[in-house]
Length: 334
Picture 1 (cartoon, rainbow, N blue to C red):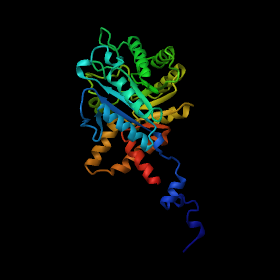
Picture 2 (cartoon, rainbow, N blue to C red):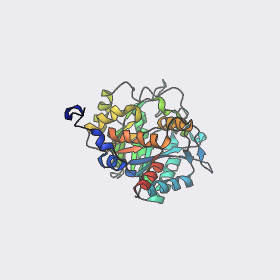
Picture 3 (tube, rainbow, N blue to C red):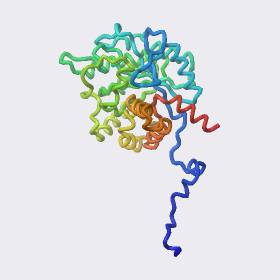
Picture 4 (cartoon, one colour):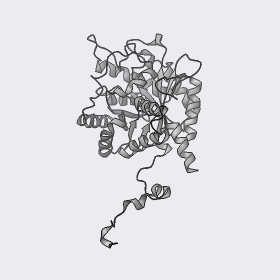
């Protein structure tokens, strides 16, 4: 017998009935402009070098990096984050290749700036780990620990040469205490007040960085637990956030993204500056590996992970899928 009181009056499923309905009521939208492409450029290679643990990602030559920047721009991606990979012979204890005006990262910045001008936001990794023979993100003291304040002096130099090369945004990523303030002062001292700082505010000591170490040819032995954050901690991130903002950060970032969506949401709720999240190499590699095995639908999984990061509060997402996803989003709207 049918009774008016026996069926639900509220039926949320009504808003899920068709693709058009679901699209109309979607609370979170992913746009090409939300995406930033991390890219590696390697010194002294004549052809792109595939990264084994990151299928589809390469260490670029200078020429292919320029082409990748143009492709990202044409797809609607907002920015490109550059990482330099110097020749092994140029690595030393102080990471001097990182402050050489003719070092690979500074050359790459000039290349990309000449290619795309101001149409694509050019960002640069501001850290020493790619350039040191020990693989740490700073200068080592006699006891083998990273010397925070000696490292800050190196970061100031790095900021200045990257700004001179034409970068729009520097990303101090070494998790040294006071790094944002020192970098801001260094930039302002040389008249580069317009160069922005994307602070790696919450950068965790993560197991998911593994493929990245291959991507940058890292020489690291041991770990970075004395300066990167403990995955167990959230309040510590909020303290780092307050310090970075006080020191002049223009934008803040959580890294990795997927395992730290709670941190990302907390940061996004607490600030009035743009918030970024970095979907790192291990996150990328897991999806690609599972898709290669046929265990998941690759394209759907990529969009789901990025939508989740966006939903948690990231206005900008650094992802190795940036150009590919931007192209597909653009095609879907035409």
